[in-house]
Amino acid sequence: MTTNPDLAALIRTIPDFPKPGILFRDISTLLLDRQGFATAIERMVAAIPGPIDLVAGIEARGFIFAAALAVPLGAGLLLIRKDGKLPGVTVAEEYELEYGRDRIAMHADACVPGARVLLVDDLIATGGTARAALRLLRRTGAAVVQAQFVVDLPDLGGAAALRADGLDVHALVSFPGH
Ligand code: AMP
Image 1 (cartoon, protein in one colour):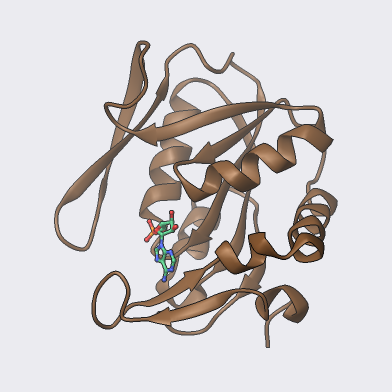
Image 2 (tube, protein in one colour):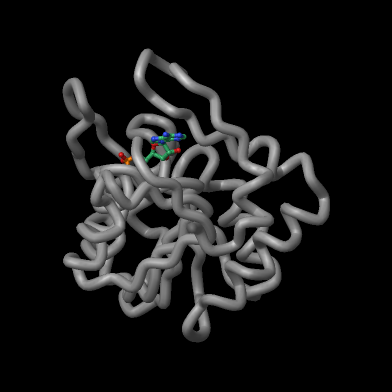
């Protein structure tokens, strides 16, 4: 049984997207619900352990929640994007995909050492993306205080791996399986 079943009910599951065997957890239906979206942001804010200087959002769906959190937190918004999209000098990290590798990047000067950063994405599965983002932020000297997700797929081990990296991890909803 997940926490926040009212929010879980607003997340649509689409089988076999983007490829056979994947259960896609579609948060666009949560965003469409004015009460559900606001409640999700309120509950994410309530779970944050202390003051935040920057909310780091992961492209693309992570940006939506990171931006909505940054405003009530009085924090700035730091963009973590697919490598090659940011115009300034960047630092990048590689991570494993099921087939092959990918790279994410941030502006090298986006974060001063010691800044208190909240890392945000819509969903954590294997954790490859979020762990690469954590490595990036730590390279720039950020004090990453927590990672927050709307959805955790705990059977894929990403949240456990992030915790093993020494990070506090919070998700509103968890779904069993893939
Ligand atoms: P991972 O790096 O394996 O933790 O995958 C996390 C990223 O992939 C997030 O940015 C998600 O948006 C996306 N993702 C992975 N699996 C799913 C899924 N079953 N449904 C929706 N998005 C997913």
